[in-house]
Image 1 (cartoon, rainbow over the protein chains, first blue to last red):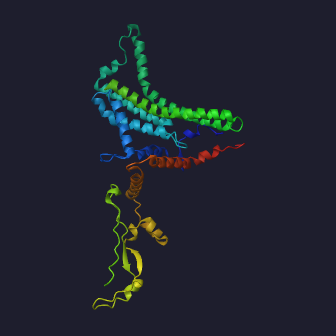
Image 2: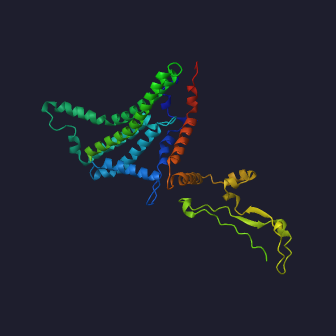
Image 3: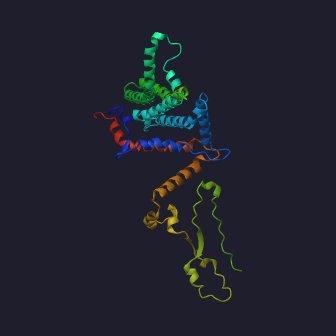
Length: 227
Length: 148
């Protein structure tokens, strides 16, 4: 039985040196820089294909000005995807389970989209606060509601990523503990729990990829409104 | 007729496989006459000396590179502290060593025509092992015990 199920989320330290930086830099080892050969090795080919897919998917709805954000979004997507998927390996630490890190990613990027909109097209940006076709008596309330929803966006972005990954890891740990604890007494129930654990792990792989995609997609949507 | 001097194949490392860095100068092992066999020939100044029988040739491998450039596996155990002291421990040197190690692994397992899952799986397995080592002080409290 674990002493505390939240120990896996404590930031790892080795003799007082925080190791979260190494956990953040490890994905760079997995993406070799492409060389100028006509046919690359298999790893580079797969990664280039994935990068093209991601970039196309994110950049199609944006106008020409929005394409300046291509490198930002693509690199953010690749980083989140890799970090989330690496966190599913045993004993590894997932930096995106830390709210501090996700807020540090979400808040500046959301603010950048907001300031871009307010700077380049201020009236159009402010016009988003009132949807078209609103009945007149509702206008004041709706503006307040829309302003709140605008200001809560970075919080939602950060907390969504944190909560999904933390909940997933926690569930995996709980169910595996239950499975091990049941094994001596009720092996049949233990095997059933292990099947559930297998399905949950597949779900977690999907969630890891989806959450990374949702984070970047929402940012691109916020950019679309403002650019 | 004197036996022709023994010929040895040149270093077989193709330049194209060595990565972006120029290849390290290989430890040139030149065959030298041993002092024992050479001593008898020092006085010979006249016409061509009599050919030495093959058994008199001492075939000792004396590598001609300085200690600084020798590879680790060629260094003798007694020379190890000297070799370590002569290595480049500046940040640039350490960065260069890390990059060389990375390039060696990359060119051996990943940058090949038909790479497989093994190349990247070894990296991930190493990452799992290192993560286990980092978090061991936390994990050792998670043992199955009747009383914690």
